[in-house]
Length: 109
Image: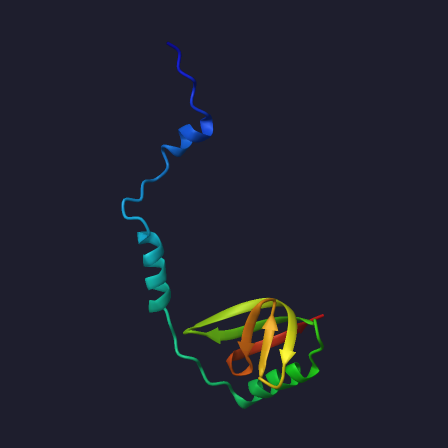
């Protein structure tokens, strides 16, 4: 009786680390993320003016770099911008950012 050899990819898979508690690593990462929350800082008047000027000069589909606050964390994003001045938010790629949450913004030339 002859046995077929196991493919190398399957052989290697049997030695991958074993996670006895499924989802534990994800839960720990989420808990760490929540623990690292910080309060939103106040912006200096000159920073507010710079953000306002940049938003005023922004044209549809300009590329921007934005640092913004969301749910206890600061994030950086780059991409094409679309403004909604009536509701006071900006879309960068598919991310909706309120004007009030913008920490910094630069137009990429």
